[in-house]
Length: 639
Image (cartoon, rainbow, N blue to C red):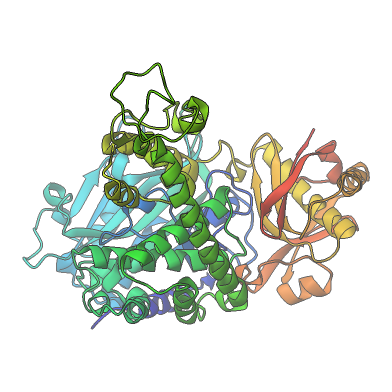
């Protein structure tokens, strides 16, 4: 039997629904109030408040497929396994069942639903150390499920321990592996667990401890289960494929790519070790991810999520040029993604016109940017192609080429500039070599990959300092990883007093903006650090100073009213009938929480919030600025 992503996703929902789990929709890919990441990067990420004790409107047993984006390895995409967008299957127990039930159900799903033979399964559990005990409980449950003792590996914290951070919830986990080798699976997993033919397909996390500020562990009063099964990766393992691009997740997209480029090998052999196949994989992944991000109303920009989106689109376009894709191909491929995934994620269809329009606009704009980059390249090489002469630089030696037609040093060869973003490097190395810093400037500013700069240089008889470029590129990559995986300290997950206050303030700000600017205002993103809140909202123009002052005054009046904050659960329809703001309807299940702050604000939200508005003290808008096309951004604080 060939496994597909659609079949696996459906089987997952049916299995957990039969075990009294509510199947909740995926959250959007943008964290509502968590500044620790640009995008949701795991299934549990949107559920942090509920794992920390907030009650979930759908109950204590939930499951879903969550849209996830990981951006730390964008430049690795193109190989057989890396993806920027993927789906994570998960199920959760919020203080209900625990280790015994979860492991038994995991074994049942693997062997009864997926029909995997026990002889090809192995598991790992936490080995224990001076800090935390060995997880013998998990091991014993696995043994009772007919997993042989020698197929259980006891591994350390690097492999089998989960933690939210240095302080907070944590606990052991157990990972499940499937043997994909042609030879029989080795009997002893402890000695062979690092063999790449053992592929991890599922992880069960047991949140059972809390680590305090002194580093000591204490049992959690609410023990939780958090699990994760990567959809596409699991399908690869189950089918014993060599690449994620061989799965049905990419079949229709690569077929369309093959047709547009007139290269049948793209669809016939997507895992091929060729430059054409690599470019096709990059285009397929990046357009798929860009479509998902755009469907959450993010537009390309030069900051935060919009910057990542722009980078993905432009990298896809560059590789499209390599394989002779026609102009304006991005929206054609996006339509294929929408048709395939909208039955599962309906927001793709709801926002289809926005997705296609933004891709068309960005592609056209990037073509102009490439032209600008080529002109910048010509300016860079001008000093090399125009050698000094005695007439324009009398201080230089005689015998120089008489070809320079400029009359002064300033007009012929201006002094090298040393902009900060180039690490202080000059414009050009002496001789016939373009500096790596300048080549990286073309990459970072104009989207020129090194190979384009090298091609243009070769046409002029020049070379590029590739080693210096790589050093600049690696430094940039390290910063990008740090920015995307851990952008700020703090975050909603810690539920500190300050972040809870700031989160509550976003409700008042949202309501005030709608009163001052109009009902077209809708939240487009929110980000909170311990120092400030950041709120993105739809609005076509810069706010006037008078509008900013009026919004600030309205929020402070709501704070001074010291209105109690009430929470009630209802259906989405009932909440809207009662006047609640309900954005991104696809995020909600059958039941939602509605938070009311006097008569001023009523909004669907997961929490947490303070008890009354007066706890916020005072509200101050620090800055109002553009975020992306049609989206404004406010930064504010409370004190």
